[in-house]
Image 1 (spheres, rainbow, N blue to C red):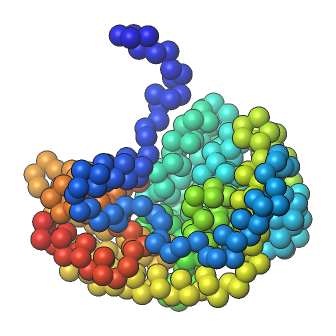
Image 2: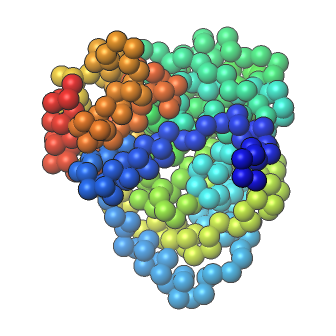
Length: 382
């Protein structure tokens, strides 16, 4: 097909590559050339996978847990996950290859061509692209100045074509933890409209200060319409395991199972035994790591505040800072991110990736000394 454009499907042309993976690849390429690059771009804390998880995974391999398994996941793992949701059983849980695949599949089973999904912005990079791949249209709704949900704007965005509202708390990229009142109001809007409320709770374990994480399921007047998506990646430092899950009403799980049976089949069998060990191990491991991340958040805010306007940052492990005061004439935050990468040797993700231009996302998932050095380099360039 040399010299001829391949006949790719139109849906592929409607989406762009993930900006976060682009920045990661460029940073790695510069490192391979011998450059000293500090990455504050990837949402992956530097903690190792806890030993009980690694040991259980190795044992599963030694026990030949290497064959096909049930499409919705290993029964023991589904039962254990269901125990965290009142009234749920194994049939309310589906394991997926990370929360990313779970969300992709959800939009596929919920949306028809021309439907709409409301997404508060700034938002995670893949929400809009996954909605487009489902043939639907993402309807972006601004959050408040401090990145909290705005129920009035969500209500105004509702239309006869609306199929779902997405809420992501603690939030990527802003680190905002949504308050109970606003989240409850949005849940009532979804219930009144008889549509799904999709709660991306991949960062549910990481809420700091005096604002705890609130589950959408707990504040909705119609829990049957709430679909919760979580992941083992962040909470248990299992990013490479690719294990996430959906907790929802049985009809939703059945639809997802039908799709997954033709899509990926079961999630990696031995990885699921590592996930089960994660749930059964001493959760003090997670609590200690959360405490360290809170300290890093405090340090990152102290270093960032003299340089940028900061809001959010009550949870997850991101700062989403306003860089508009540092933009040269005609320069975007994407241009600034490239300037920081090449001149300072610090990788960050531009706000355009999250539909939040004029900002950059900084991950504070690295150690204190590296954060200190990274911000010193950023300050020097600015």
